[in-house]
Image (cartoon, rainbow, N blue to C red):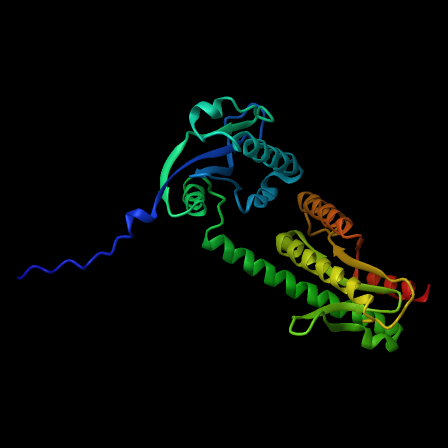
Length: 303
């Protein structure tokens, strides 16, 4: 039998690759435990230094509950401190020994040497090697599914609120699901409710789709920022003061199907959204039911 010719292999040009040094950063979730979690990578390629956190670290909230906030804070402080330390130093073992760690539970791995086209490629390779939480294709798909589910739940909440409002004030029908054009050629901006005294979007936070719910909520907060800017352009046809609010229906201790940890995670998510709203001088208002949201809208418009 004649030999089979080997296929022609195309190797990338070696001159396109440059030497890169990198080190993994770890945090111990418990003061005296040997367990360590990779929370980021510091890498230097030529004159470029980059310190990158592990994407998807928030998934640890499912395991650590309230303790995740301490872990997350330690991770951010560690990466910021290391970035400052390495800003004017080479990334080698000798300079890393001089780093004053921000807390006892922070550790560094060994310096790794690799070749990459750019610094992002180097970080990607090291994250895949040292972090089990690194956002590979499968987790990304899971997050996309969760975000779609959160969007469907949020849309159902809007329908329930609208039905409750219209049962009492049918003349408010045209105030729901309004769309506005920020500028010519820009995407249409959708607002859940546009009244005379309040402009609001509706959001849902539930433990089983919390990450997707938080992302959707932040997007709706940004839409409210743009809506507030549009108010000066006469979008809402009124000159009286208006309130711009994200009305959040959320799980509570009264929901028997929700665990204590789930409630704790929802409360943390609410705190995060309230902080985000405060940055933009908006209001994030937690409300426990669609009926309560409907009543709040009617009462606000009647004030």
